Image 1 (cartoon, rainbow, N blue to C red):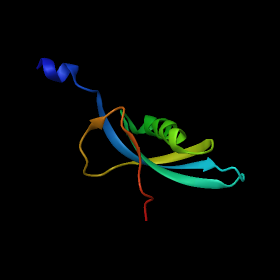
Image 2 (cartoon, rainbow, N blue to C red; image 1 turned 90 degrees about the vertical axis):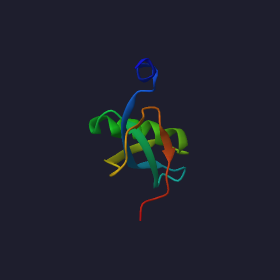
Image 3 (cartoon, helix red, strand yellow; image 1 turned 180 degrees about the vertical axis):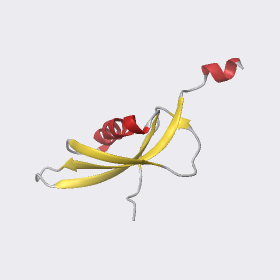
Image 4 (cartoon, helix red, strand yellow; image 1 turned 120 degrees about the vertical axis):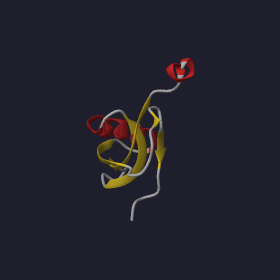
Length: 84
């Protein structure tokens, strides 16, 4: 029981499609997968994750939960291949 109390905080995985501005003032997209406590917070978490990987300012993200996936560690953040 003590081990679970010391484990990482859990959330739900979300896939986010984020837009950022390039050096040529054109919009580009970056897909990231993040872990968030709630759907309402996923956009902000996705935006922060994308900003660490984007070469320009992130202007926004839209996120959706990843179906059939279990809980994730709240600090999770990774770039994913673009969705078809």
